[in-house]
Structure formats: structure tokens, C-alpha cells
Length: 318
Image (cartoon, rainbow, N blue to C red):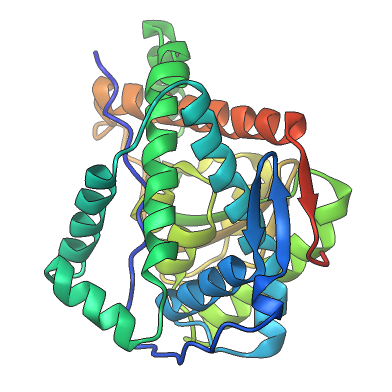
């Protein structure tokens, strides 16, 4: 059996939220962070904040922008590391690759590329920040394919163990879940990540922000490219903290932020049903699920290693 090809994470832009792009100021030219030999300007950060707030539907409030800034800057830092690692491994992404990625993004929004660019310009959004995001994720996809995917091994025993657990859980609840996962890897970021998770839950519950678009932009879990979709998950497959957090939630209800050893999870219950012993997933489905879970862990660990070994000068208050 062969694992599915890695999916590229793209931004899903929503045009309903229009903002006016400010003129470039002296503050915009200040350095927000240095990542090895690359600098991230305050303008880079401001452009990405505007783009994410527009695409997610979150209200353009100064206090919310301040809460989002550290997490968005962290994403920009990670994207620079992704491109740098691809370059170190001599894995290049061409301008044509980025253009095709932009065309795919436009198609996902039922538009032609030129019309999509025009819409973004009209909204006062910087095309460069989208192209940079596309390039970073294409670059990372190449790194994952060459270096990490070959390390993923799934045995027949692994598949048997999962199917056996599912059989034993017959009659238990099964949830169709979506997830936003925000890593909190050290005490320095704990407070800010907790605040951000709480703000996201507030905005989603109030109907001011889209769960799925926040997942696409912020979540670090495997399903982020599909709006956080985790598919059907049996209750006994969830780790204890998530199992307790999802119990009692109604369909279409969003959980409070759930703390696990790795960070904060926000879960959306899309549907519920009882797990049936005669309707278990196929062996290939289990294989793909296990492979994606292990690849996801490898990616997170590898990115943490890159951050730990890099020179990173974060000049934005966190």
C-alpha cells in the first residue's frame, strides 16, 4: 500500500471582507524578526495580518490584531525556515510553480487567476504575501516528500491493532470532527497561545469568524488544509483530554480550548453516530490515517528542530 501524496496547504481567501491598505510608513519598514540570513519586516507582518483577518472573517479590531500578531509572526518565521531548508537541500520552487499554485487557489474560489488578483488588489491586499505563502508550502512539501515521508512505516500489526480497538468500541460514540490545533511548546508562548485560542472560540461562537478558515490559516494539525477536517473519529481513539472535551457537545458546537501536553485544541462536532462493529473503516483507510498521523508528528518535530538550531531574533512583543 502507498501513502497518498502530501497535500499542499493553501490559503482559502474570502472576498466579503474588504480592507483599505495603508501607505507604507516608517514603522512598516522596521524589522519584525530575523531568521538566519532573512529579515521579516513589519510590513510583511502587517500584510499577513490583514490577509488573514480578511480571509477568516474576524473583525478588524486593534486588540484582536495584537493577539494575532505573535502567532502570525511565528507562522512567517516557520515559512522562512521551510524555504531555507528546501534551498539547503537543493529543492527549488520556480516562479511557474508559484503561478500554478495561485491558479489553483483562484479555482478553489471559482475564479480565474487574473480576476482573483484584481479582487485582491481592490481589497487592498498584497499579492506578494499570498505568493510567499504558496512558495513556502510548496517548498515544505518537497522537503516532506524527500526527507520525511520515507521514514513513515506502517505495519500490518499496526493496522490490526487499530481495527481491534474499533471493534471493542462498537456501540460507543463516533464523531465527525474538525480541529484547530495551536502548539504551545514552551512556557514563553503559553499565555499568548491560550489567549489566542480563547479569542478564536469567542469569535467562532459569535458567528464573526469561520472555524474552517481559521483552521486553514492557524492550525498545525494534519487536516488544516481541509479546514481542520479529521473525519470520523471513534471516542476511544481520542486522547483522554480531547475525549473529555468533546463529551456533551451538540452537533455544530465548538469546544472550549482543550489543553494537551503539546498545545491547545479547539474541536467542532460536525456529526455524531454510534460506532458499528460491522461498518469499520477499510484496512487501506486505517493505513492512510496512521501514515498521516505519523507524518504529521514527524513534520512538527522536524520544524521544531529547525527552529531550535536557527538564529531567530523576534523583535515583536510576545
